[in-house]
Image 1 (cartoon, rainbow, N blue to C red):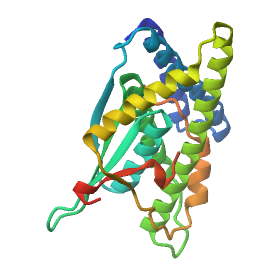
Image 2: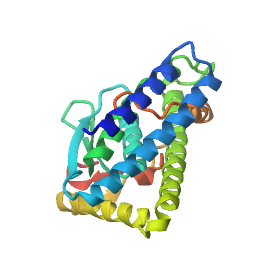
Image 3: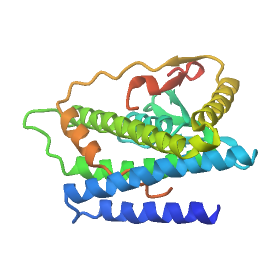
Length: 252
């Protein structure tokens, strides 16, 4: 890890610590969020451009992350959202063992630096969402699990939108900086995306889009608002169903 990378991640971790402080107000958390999101996005672009000048320094890799109950599928969807938002790919895998609960895992593909960003950010968001959901009262008469699943869906959708904006803004800033040199940031990122897509296709030649979850709870708006306030810095550095791909061979 380079000195530049270490310094950038250290700044992000400091912002995260402030945002996760229970004493932080929503307004303070939003300030930390905006700065942390910018740092994460700019860091990802910087690493991508450096890797283009040094082929092999940031290779495509993969990892499998297993989800624990409760709300394992919702956690898998959040991880997929974060991964796709940070230029990785995610395959949602589901097993249904005989006479046992379903098991959910996510197979991630991406360049090593982007997988690191996704891992850090997901870990942070999982902690933040768990804490905020626990402090959100379930409306009288509503089923707790239904409310919480819809809350988590709203949180995820909000995060997806914010990640998309942060990454697009970082790309525009990078394009403006590199314009005098004639170098295209978008082409560099497109080449990296093709490399990741190729890695996915090699392992999963037949994929289908995951079916949207059926939600009956009323918590989506509250979850969306919590996602809008969540810190995007990550503790270790688009929420639509289309962001997930299911492995047919695993019966997802």
